[in-house]
Amino acid sequence: MPAKDVPDIVVSRLPLYLRALSFLAEEGLQVISSKELGHKLGISPAQIRKDLSHFGEFGKQGTGYNIQYLRDQLRRILKVTEEREVALVGAGDLGRALMHYGGFAGRGFRISLVFDNNPQKIGQKMGPFEILDSESIETIVADRGIEIAIVAVPAEAAQEVVDALVRAGVKAILNYAPITVKVPEGVHVQYIDPVIHLQRMTYYL
Amino acid sequence: MPAKDVPDIVVSRLPLYLRALSFLAEEGLQVISSKELGHKLGISPAQIRKDLSHFGEFGKQGTGYNIQYLRDQLRRILKVTEEREVALVGAGDLGRALMHYGGFAGRGFRISLVFDNNPQKIGQKMGPFEILDSESIETIVADRGIEIAIVAVPAEAAQEVVDALVRAGVKAILNYAPITVKVPEGVHVQYIDPVIHLQRMTYYL
DNA sequence: TAGATTGTTAATCGATTAACAATC
DNA sequence: TAGATTGTTAATCGATTAACAATC
Image (cartoon, rainbow over all chains, first blue to last red; front, side, top):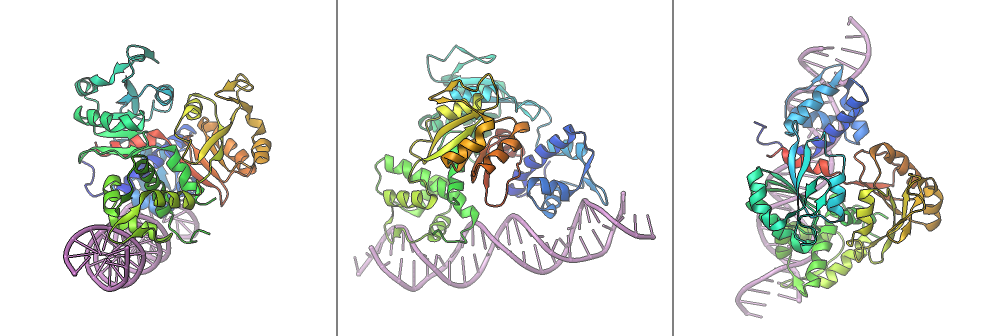
């Protein structure tokens, strides 16, 4: 359904547009131009128009973009119109923080399973969920048809967890472990490592 | 000291090289070629060589790169040879997780101040630190000469916190709040929003 | 020496920007 | 209508890759 040859870098900006538009819609605003939106995001107006043009015509000459309409279109393009179930692996401090994070709701995601390999933790409650044994990732995640997972385990355990998730049919993994993991073609991985982000700035100090 | 015109995108990859090399050094390996390193990181060998060539000649023909040596050079280039003090703003679940995160030590950073604006929390202990009043960011961070901060507060409070940090002289901000913030020229911001990363993958599902 | 791999140049590829006709 | 802004084309800019002489 989506155009087959949209550059990844264009896709990577769409969530930023969506986030800004959702905020503007909450503020009750109706319309925004590429110029104004670009100013808010630090992106050129031409780039915003070009990015959106890969998916259709969403604006109106002389006026700009209807905020609610464009937001809804972006949700559709990014396939986050419904909340998708997410499996969380790792019930440490980070896992707990993610569990309690209020920012998933309304943006397309809902954590609905939590796994850990620590016998002390398995069977205990974290938030509304019972912590499940990591050994059961493959069967339970597959049964539930979950396609998205968040990995919040130590580096040493990450590849093994990712392998289990892949076998369970997961296609999108957000990896907090500070290691590059191997996945087969067709499985997507995004990385969050705060130290990497910090080191990207210290160069300029 | 660093070459003035190294592209940002090149700088952004250096921390990934450093992370991989540190891991390889811990494993006790001595030497690696651009081909092998590229394979581990999913980056072309030519790109690794080109990236490094912006900063000097670190390899040896026919052999590759001495792992410890290149690691040390990257630490120097990225200015993470010493541990730098980091101010953390936000003592919620995420702030606590960051506080307890063991991954900063040895990679150039050490959280050394924690702020929050909640009177219930101010004065309490979190980890080894007393939680300080956000009102005092400007004076305390400036006094300590801290240049790096992590913002882990709700979106509504983020711009205000960032403004205070900038006034305190902070030059590098890692922002976990789901909002694009305005900063003056010369102040660097990196963003971590798990939902953005997840939405970058749902497009492909 | 033969084999391997670097550092670098030139070619290719792709992304961003500028400009403007179309049009609301 | 006059003014504003889109969608798109073409030009520019920049990044990646291929190729290879140098050399360990």
